[in-house]
Amino acid sequence: MKSLLNRKAYLTVGVLIFFMIMIFRANSPKSLVEEIKRPYKGYVSNIYSIRGGYIIRIKTETDELDLSGCTNKFMCSIDVGDVIYKKADDNYVTIVKRSGGKIIELPYLYINPGVRKDFRWPDEWDNKWMEAGLETCDSCYCEEHLEKYKFK
Image (cartoon, rainbow, N blue to C red):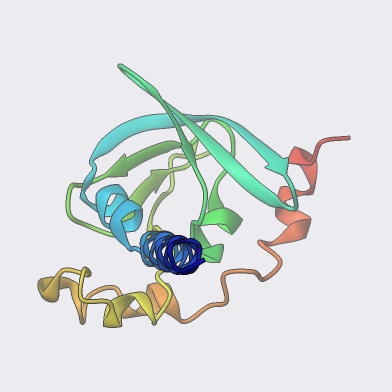
């Protein structure tokens, strides 16, 4: 009987540790940091809606990238055919509009203010791109601008 209780205790502790690790990993800023570090140059080949959000597909010379979690300013400014330049270690993108060639520089990814407090967030980025966290991540994404890209 005692060994059965020990097994249950070990199993319970193991399950708790597993869930703690999963929560720790889910709240990690790792993917955000990797995306900010990654440079690319390409054009917007597609914008599509999925589960209430929007995905931007960028065609580069060697790859296709699917972007999400972008700032509202970025989402409201982008159209299929626009050219995008993203420097390494920067949370800004430069957009060259296909119609007229207008050049716009905007914050790229939404940065939740809580992410900046995470010990895994790079110290040198603590006070950079503060405007990328001022908007709410779940706001409308300029529905009137993106309406044409909704799946019908």
